[in-house]
Image (cartoon, rainbow, N blue to C red):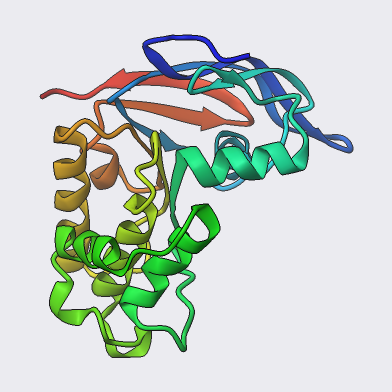
Length: 226
């Protein structure tokens, strides 16, 4: 059942257990529509597990997860795939571009799995990230920063309710990191909801709110100055 809410994400008493390992323990978290949240923590703190649950790639062992008004913690794998496809734009550290497809075609792949391809719309998405003139280039002909911007265009093409980014600048030099973060800041100013999983305090500073995970729990929450 879907309900109207000002929150895009509500996590209530969520735990994730793998055998004897408690990856997440009794997590409570709310993210408002239009908010930018950073999730930080050392290796093994639960960041990846949290991202997988938010991104509809895994289900918690216990607790409730409401994404865009829908309870997802009890959904089937197929229903989770549809939620991820229809409502989440994923940006990965490793880009995951198809090597033999052009930048434009890589964006159009996301359209294909969602509904139908539209080359003009895909080209507009590349223009939005400043890559219209690189549309016919293959991934190996693009810089790391350009490849990440193709990933962002691909994530935006289906108008997601939530942008979920996993270490989006982890493979970039300082100049390209700034370009990508400025692009995310512009998307946030336009109303996008963004959750970024990062180890970088510099990246987290761009967010409105930061949570720090330690041993599967939220150790602290901070709000960043405007």
